[in-house]
Image: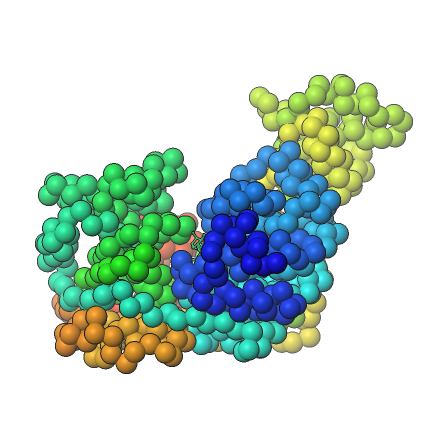
Length: 638
Ligand code: ADP
Ligand code: MG
């Protein structure tokens, strides 16, 4: 049966390594984890079973672009699949929901954020689901390279939605991440399928390179075979622009690709690369997801990747056709501070954690929060703030209840009076009062809930229900903004300081783990043993050859990445920089806050104080964070 579907529906002759075992496991009713390298065919592991399972397959995917790629593939094969996402209008979403309800739909793709929406949860809880798929499942692990706090809640959703089995898909899972995935979804090691990570057609070279020599080296490398399809990875958008221009001047058809470009433009560039109109893309990490070009002959890292996982993913795009391909890193340690600073910028000050915990304890038993505003008030970036709240959830201190939009605005599609005329008696008065309390600007009417309550004792919930209904009927177009999350404060029996200590420690550990990961990455590049072997081993493939014979280490070239030496700093220089920041903020700013400013790390606070315009901002970005922190402590002591 599976065989037949494979041929008839998908048009494939046979299953690839790993696919058979995963599909068998899923079909026998067990949860399963598939860890295959990029391009190995993970999607088929859910797409095929989905056609044979009795109910819906629900796929959680972290990126809209990934969803769209998989959907267009499925539609090509005539499979009933759809997504609910932010790019759709109301009608499209309702059609998808109707198809899911009627059982017509086989595959539904959503982002994890969709599950925070109470209305969606209500809808989906009424649809029987056979299988929950988590694509890019390493996002659930704090030890993964792409941790998404909301992913920590997926096991909970699985239980409450009564989904009998899960399939986790990822390309990059270290042993820590694998055991995390197994624990969270009760997957046995027998049902964890790891295919070989090792690729015998990829030639890995680490070339030590001073910053000022890199452009030359890049040119030489590319000129060696100017027509080979090549991706050059860089960290910053402007580097992408600059390099593409430089390469063009030497006659290479190169274009820049990054998130700062219009999406139409991006698609065009990607298309040009796919069809071979251009040979070289200079890209930030924005490029690659869903790029299905099999004959990429070269991946060059002009800057350090963000992690070993990123490196693996990026070089993994080379040589999908199995032909010999080169992966070259032009390396030095100059960019290491920048990478470390990303990490330090995400660690909240203890003061900030205190602020959050106090707020929550004060607002027991119900606490409402608007993330963007609270991020500013607490001086914690949004992502770590989300992480912090998930930690507090997992500690049992708070429990999410629901979210609502604090601001609603709408415009009329049907005339106001016609809507009112559809109702009688008390309801008619109620509808009239809503419109009375929604002053109209040019086209949009903003609902004033306070006025509705004070003037008409109309409860917020009833109003929201009503306008939702008008919207569903197509009488108005409704927009909602400023999401507010409501939490129940479930446990304040523990002392605040105990909770604060615990959170502080969690973040410190996280910071430590992330900086260690960066050190490990450098250690990997400077390895004196086979790079292919070490890389495969890192990703739990223990069958790679001890010495591949096609990496720089095997060729006897052990890379030592150069590091620029920073001149010593006269501490008195720091005084005016520190004072300017203190004067704008307060004397009680933490040492860390000052250090971040000097290292050029932005936080909500530094944005508020307009730190970027200050004399000291980013002045010491070449220096390691820990060194700058010591300097700051020294200066403030005296
Ligand atoms: P991954 O998610 O592991 O990176 P995909 O699921 O996107 O990989 O699959 C990569 C490509 O391989 C797709 O074009 C897919 O259609 C193709 N593919 C998957 N399985 C098979 C198979 N058994 N036979 C032939 N092609 C396959
Ligand atoms: Mg995939």
